[in-house]
Image (cartoon, rainbow, N blue to C red; front, side, top):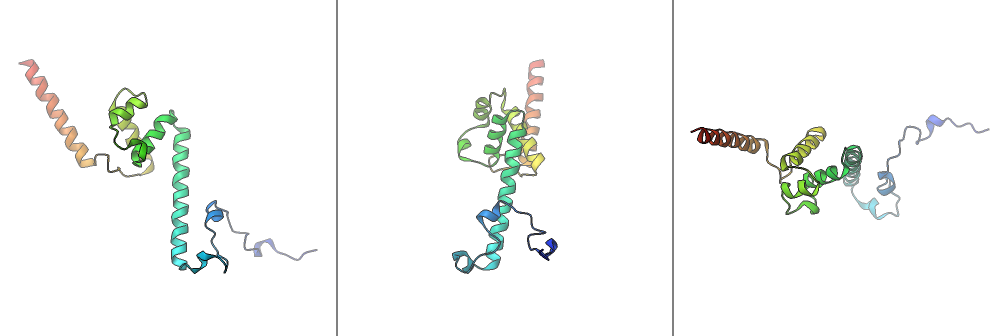
Length: 149
């Protein structure tokens, strides 16, 4: 009979992460990566884990969205991926079968609010959105005044 306490095993408190298969925590002496500075290896591994977590979040968002096609376009837009480059919100909303640019923008804002992801460079910032909203309201009021005269 073995006299081995499972708690003494180094794997006892270890939870395997898929990144461990790609970027192991420890390197053998023969490994090229063992020559890298430990801080660089740890930073790279941490970034790989964060990337994996983000990818899991994005996949969860797409799979649980009421319209996975819209969710995919929202992610592509927010992350500024190749399929949306050069496309306007009107074009994307049309591709998604949505009635208006605003419907697509609402989906984008919902995603950003839910994930804490900041606006991408193709999105208006809060100040620009507020200024646009103010100008639009002013324009509507002016048009109503002209129609009533």
